[in-house]
Image 1 (cartoon, rainbow, N blue to C red):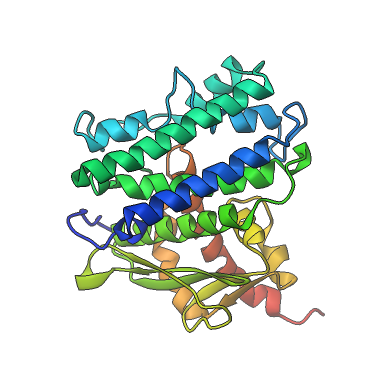
Image 2: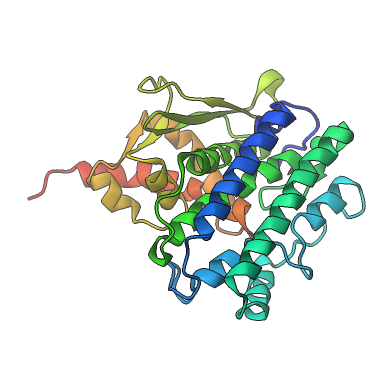
Length: 315
């Protein structure tokens, strides 16, 4: 299937007020930072082989890998958005190794630097509106800079849950909600990129978020809040935002969640409209939030395929 070139909008979250986007993104970052302040960095996280320090390290900003530097260079035309992608897994491994002895204070300082850089990136789009929708390379193809800034919240939310064994506690609602929104946004971006027509919701207690692709005038994609208890569209409903994020990131087994009704698909034919996207998920190169959010499409596809088996009476 050929890709759709990004020319005009709407572009999901990137078409919302920059001030609203900035406030949501920084609130999510601050929530993650506050959670990290309670963590024992030497305790093992949910990720095999990674302690709390390793999880935090690869999300922070360090002199050798300043947060957002590559994306801003692309938005300003100093690097082609379709240039050879970084091998993010290799970058993460080097960061984790370099900072394996970082103190709690150094980890928090690196997170504070990342927060400052994120705020500065939003401020730059306010000063130069052309940056807001400037194309930047991602694992779902070129997307606006603001799309990528919002996607950071997904990785923060998922890794906040990974830090639970380290004493992090339950992530605040503001962080989880920003993560669900980022998941809907990137899913919409991937659908628009590959010409898949879909209108789908990610429902959690209190509402959730949905996306529609293509958007207005047959281009781009839209995101919208879901009213509590009234779906009216194909959707995946989860018992909690944390569970939905865990399922999308492969942290929990989807068949078991379906069997226990902790995940509930609504309107299976509508969800099956996303099936063509499965061809574009397995080959995605290593990357942070965008790779994780895109793999959620595989989860949706598997859910629809498994339901007939799970619903059969047991002999």
